[in-house]
Amino acid sequence: MPNNDLDAIDQRILDALAGNARMSLKELAQSAGLSSPSAAERLRRLEERGVIAAFTIDIDAAAVGYPLQAIIRVRPLPGQLHVVERIIQETPEFVECDKVTGDDCFIARLVVRSMAQLDMILDRVAEKAETSTSMVKASPVKRRLPPLSGV
Image 1 (cartoon, one colour):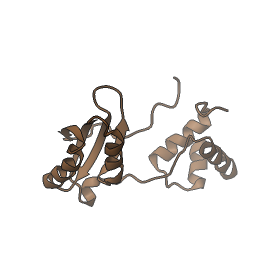
Image 2: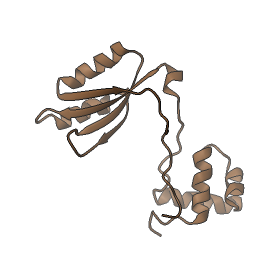
Image 3: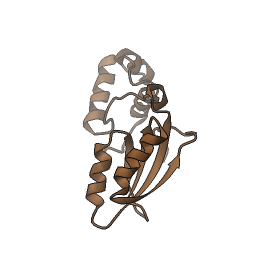
Image 4: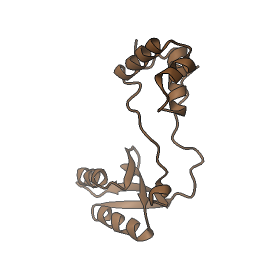
């Protein structure tokens, strides 16, 4: 079965885990309408197929001391693409980064404790790239699963 072939039971499992990835196997089985051994087998197959890549937690950055977030568009200077990519990868305050098409090469999300910290990080990147920074005011859509059915 290809990775994108999800039946209704797989969808129920994923929906349940999206709501609470720490639920017990018994709770997951009940949510999916399966026995615990059947739910465990389905879960194992979803992991093997790469549909479930990880079980993780979602932390509120502000609650752990990072009240500011910024979206940074990055356009490396000629010959600096790999250097800039490495700087982003090695800077833990960059919590997400996508390599994109268009005028910029990277769009990244950065969490910082202060504007001074933002400037310090951007100064390191600016030596090798042009940047454009937008401060995040709110996130009306948090990271979520794509629609899993009907398409």
